Image 1 (cartoon, one colour):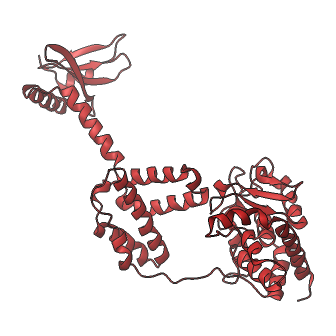
Image 2 (spheres, rainbow, N blue to C red):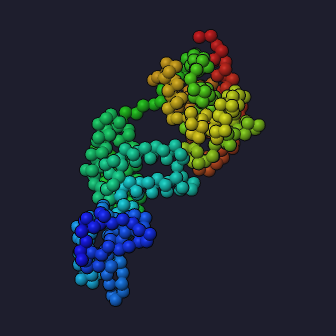
Image 3 (cartoon, one colour):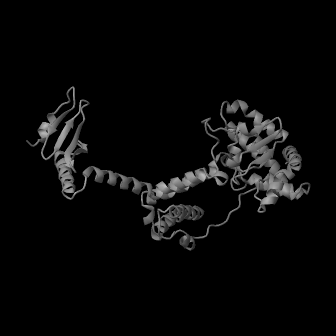
Length: 399
């Protein structure tokens, strides 16, 4: 006898599971836990089998009967409903795994774990940020279906907000993801991203603002000394002038990478832009700044932690401090590198190669790069102390 909705609604759980039979093999399993699940019992190639058709009331009595009839139609066609259901689930999983968003994340994970060519944490975060810009529009689409007009529409929306450089970087990122999809066999069509290069406006190249006048630098150092903001920001701001390393490396400086007895900061290859270990000699002033952070950092692994000690200082902290000191458009965290490079070369005391090595610039000649890694270290030790002494002298000079 066929079930009714009233019978189903009035059915309550008992001490054991029980079945409420409908018709043609369909029944409702009322579990001891209280759940109600539709199941279909059938025979295929002489074997008795069953298949779940969903949970009541999400799947109504009418819907369950429709699913039953669809399953029986498969049986009439010589196909096993359970096998068909498994195949459909697999197809769905493969479809989800082949979306642009899924492949992009797979690509980023590969780059993070790419051995000597792996990207650092800062680059990973920037790449994930680029993905977040394109994911709302393209993330759920099969990677094989992404066309030039689709991608161009996203890029033009970004460019339309004035972010020309971001649009350019986004085109490049999407292109790398699509190349990866082609290489792994999940896209057979050509990559449309390279052809869109000419469709985007060329961004205006802007150098990082930097002070290269000695008197102006002295005034900045005085202002920095009086900065009364967050202690980690103050410390990172001061040490940026002395060490002139990349802002991302400064803010993520770890206690584990410091050898204060030997006056060395050894940045692991995994944390550098160029993916090679970089040794930074520490002046007396730099060591003093680092030691002053010990009580502030507490148990954090970072010398300059954020308000959350498990995280480093934010990317914009030092630039924000410079803005608050009145140096917006005049000096940036990255600008300390240009300042040091200009004034160290200007004084004529140091080998230009030693200065380049101190800045961790990449040497195009691989053999020469290995040599330069160690050849200039004694000179760099002397140079870093001279530079810190020079900063102290400029800070003490009258305006």
